[in-house]
Length: 324
Image (cartoon, rainbow, N blue to C red):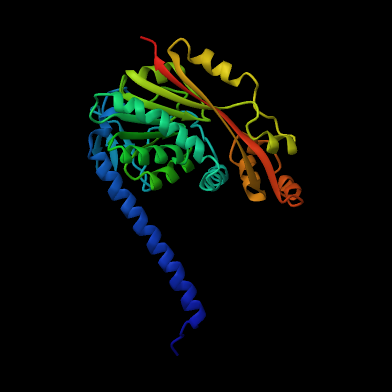
């Protein structure tokens, strides 16, 4: 006797198959778009992390340098330029990346993205470069670079965009979102796998900075935009749960670390009050380095007694030019 799947189970199976098919199609579309990106001139700005040969070329499902060192292009669409020798840095975990994606989707940091755009666009307009290069170091999920790309389009600017991050989970998510951008898994504390004097605008938002390498890849006419937290940034959340807040001298440390290679040309402080839901407050604590040192379940239980948390977003955006 032929067994017939009950209707309710057929619907469940059909749903799962549809979701799987959708995921497969999305991956194929991401792959095709990534191949189109790699057909452009953007690959010429990458450098082999093994022999340091300048310029990579597409080779089936990989990219290669002139000395035939090959690097995988993942099915999600990012290029992995992390060296396999030794212990590979992990970067943000999947849970941290997912928490950050949820929090950024709430729009809480949209004014920061807007300030980055308003700072970058005038500089790009002043350049005579037909296709400027924009680099987002420690770019995570691609939220800020995505906002900047929309600003570029509104101003009829067509840049070559590159995002670098060490986290495999961040690289996967960014590659799905930034389908016309080269997303590269790289360790920015080591040598940045980019050709020297190639970047017109670099952005670093709440991410580590390798000053000497950043200086190497920036053009003489380039601008480096760095967002750092000020003293009161998200203090309402941090104090509530006894989490260590921002260092009072964090910006001073930034200026000192960059001063041998860059000088400040513009500085803006952005402060505004936000009201976070319990879920957003949990994501704040789950998306950064604090996530490695706190008991998330304990935080969740404490949040259960609260309806909302009022706190400040308090950041600096500093714009730097290379020392000539």
